[in-house]
Image (cartoon, rainbow, N blue to C red; front, top):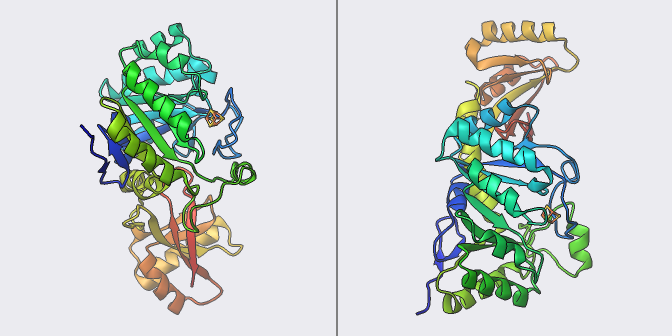
Length: 361
Ligand code: SF4
């Protein structure tokens, strides 16, 4: 019997059941815990940013982790229902990974679903046992091509086991071999990610003759087409294994947006409006050399002269500027022209509050 290829509501493609880790990820309900940027491999397609690559740093989403509370608070702010542990190679810092699994399970209970990405190079039976008894729910292996011994070793454990790999356009035979192996050994899933360009892998991809699929996507030309071919093949040649193709756009349009929306409602200040994309929109009055004291005076003037409610205007002393609701900016521009520089700003509700658009007035 031919198995059906389903298009999911997040526009990914699926044969079989979607892994639990992916279901939560699409909802934006998975905390991304980047344990370390260290790794045992040097894959040419590795997309990790300069800021993290080969550096022994930990991030909970965009927040640099300095203490346990950073992770717990970040998980609470986004109402995390689970955590995806990633890197680099998380097992390059095995004790840290183990500690964080225990920490998250202790704080959020057994239901908090934890999956771990690993290339498997540093995994041993003893380490796997420790990870599983700490509460790990799912493991996603990225095996060396052609060597599936690590899968044989892990498949005996009682947690969900699958593989997750990027779809490299000329690797059809290799991916089918892996899928056949997973089907026969009783693994749960194979996740196929669209290969993506990033600032750190672009040169290596271009050198291998790969190019962008179009001007608006970071996806590599031919990666999605091959993923579809693999799913077609799987619909006819597999019975138990689930295969899930995750396109590059899913991360931005569903996973990241949904995570922003979940976090925004907890961190938005009274004067910040949440857009449909989960961005925070507000008006900014730049200080132009004013001291903090002068900024506070200016704030009081604006409250008095324009009747702006005090909770809708604040001094940001770190960035040395005034922030207010965007709809007051026009009025401020009309009535207080004297050298004030004004803008409407859109920023992520993330720990780093990255500004993604500044519209000057
Ligand atoms: S195994 Fe993963 S983290 Fe390590 S170099 Fe390869 S792609 Fe990057």
